[in-house]
Image 1 (tube, rainbow, N blue to C red):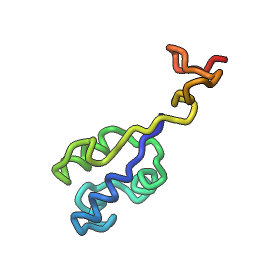
Image 2 (cartoon, rainbow, N blue to C red):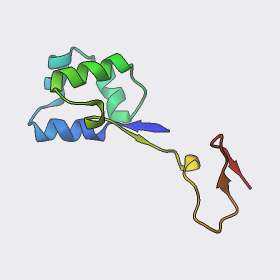
Image 3 (spheres, helix red, strand yellow):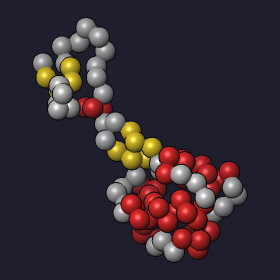
Length: 89
């Protein structure tokens, strides 16, 4: 599974804030902001700091997106998800 932060950047646009404004409000580094833009892993305390600064919930800034192998195939296909999340034929 992957985490996407598109909601964060949409929220910034909706509130007429720039990325620099977010950095100033939270104290997060440029590198951390770049990680968010690329959908890379960041510490949960960073997400908490962002939520506190923007007065929002985690689901307002991030979403969990299943990887392709995590998604079941269409009915009738020979590939199905097992209980452990691995595909079996």
